[in-house]
Amino acid sequence: MSGYWVQVDKLPGGYAIVSLCKEPANTLTYKLWQQLADTVQHLEQDSSVRGIIIASGLKRDIFSAGNDIQGLYAPKTTKEAYRKFWVMQNQFLARLYRSPLVTIAAIRGACPAGGCAISLCCDYRIMTEQGHIGLNEVALGISVPAKWAGLMQNTIGQGKTEQMLQFAKLVSPQEALQIGLIDQVVAKADLLSTAKAAMQQFLRAAPFDAGRQMTKNHLREQFSLDWEAYCVSEVDGAWEQLSQDSTVKAIAGVLEGLTKRKKSKL
Image 1 (tube, one colour):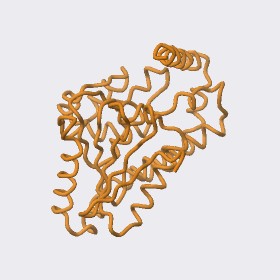
Image 2 (cartoon, rainbow, N blue to C red):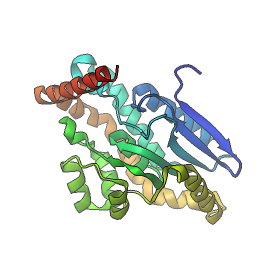
Image 3 (cartoon, rainbow, N blue to C red):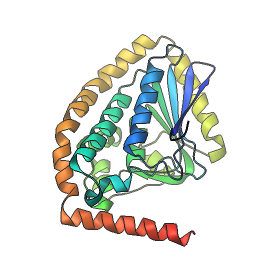
Image 4 (cartoon, helix red, strand yellow):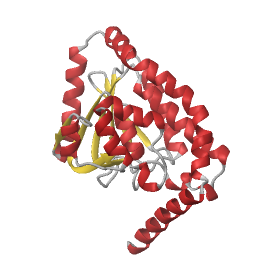
């Protein structure tokens, strides 16, 4: 379907691969967040699907380059458009975090910002040997969303999270594994086969979904529900930050750099 960037491949054994295919970098627009949300909700309602592997279907080694910078540039959008975008992305992430499905992120290459947030919401993260990962919003002159910061804190602890987020640190797969941000590092050629093997192992280990799902809910539901509610009120402060002159200038500089890189490739 033209303009539909999420591909689903259902596999024998009760799981599916969900591929993000928005060339060239899986930039996360409102429409892509919505398509992801609709896809995952549909799979959650499919009794034949017990787990999903989220992967990149791009030609280049990019899981996702993160949110669409154009959507963060206040002079080119509106508060209402941004509110819609902000609530959609955060409600999807909060629901993915507590999804009853087993969720694995198969990360090929670059995984900053929103891509990192998607992976952190999954139960298990596998990454290729080449790439980087982290929540680097501070490099754009904006703060890391509160619940995104909390998500990383829940995963790697307070101290490491402070170092990562305050200084917009993007780490290699090897360092990410060392600090617990991801669970495995593999060769690119082995990424999907490793993710499939992990999924099969997890589904065998918990053959009765009800017990696993309830346990996951005990661990994640309260944070997830708080996140869903908080993002609605959080958007006002986020928009105010985006509208500040310093932030507008910082994002304008990023957009200018992207434009120059595109022209240099022509």
